[in-house]
Amino acid sequence: MNIKKIFISSLGFRLTVLILASVIPPMLIGILFTSYRAEKILRQDAKELLAAKGQAVTNLVNQWADLYTMALRNLSIQPDIISMDAQKQKLILTKAASVYKDITITTTGKNGIAVATSDRIKDTQNYSDREWFKRAIRGQLFTRQTLISKTTRKPRLCISTPIRAEKIPQIVGVMVLCKDLATVANAVGSITLGQTGYALLVDNKGQVISHPNREFITELKNFSNYAPVEVTLKKKPGSSGYFSFTEQDGVQWMSYITRLKNGWGVVVQQQEKDVLQEAIQFERIAIGMATLAVLGVGALTWWLASSLVRQSLQQLL
Image 1 (cartoon, rainbow, N blue to C red):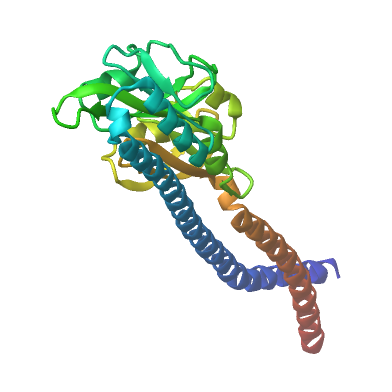
Image 2 (cartoon, one colour; image 1 turned 180 degrees about the horizontal axis):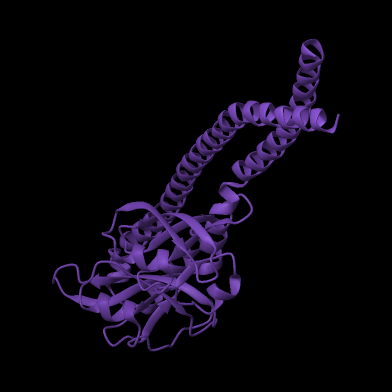
């Protein structure tokens, strides 16, 4: 009797293994293929979303820059501005500042000392050490510089242009338009993706213009060594593309980087685990269901195989 039971068990076990061997591999292959396809689709969707957000930031910044550079250019060629008469300039600058909110416009002489400003407080600062002044006085049409304001001590974005004499083609002064970075930072910072995605905007030196951490903006933290920023600033102006990288702590990121025509860099990024979270959840659920299915099929197969072997032996004996 013991031998009979052992024989039945052995044969039942072999049949069970044989049946499971023909069922499990196709099941696992199906799960793996489905998971692979789901991950591929999610990854592609994430790339397209990153690109769309990156383009949105690019358009936003370009529109903002074009608005103020055009305003600056139009003001700089006004006869009253070219006259370098402080009172005449003051009237124009004050009116312009009332139209373009949250900005300060200042003119300087060739020596860098302020002549007139749109602020109520008289500006007597010497700006000859500022990059925007040095480049404008040498004739560069537009110079953009992020800096800490000498008057407000807040981070600002300044755009400057030369003031040229009407009849004699010589530079008689410089006009600069400055705006608090908070306005730009808030506009770009409103762009988010999932749980971890955000947009990062830096100037041509890698200094932060917009970042979720406001402290970085306040201190104009330099991100030029941050992998996506470093790669972005090496690109040709007007170019863009995808970039994936892994931080020192092992966190993997997907990003879409753009080098703007003015030299700034836009990085829109999101953690891979956030992107692939749905695929990971699907895979876990699928594996769990497959495990239960295998256990169920195994138990049912064992019972059926044992019953069939037992009945067959009884008929033979």
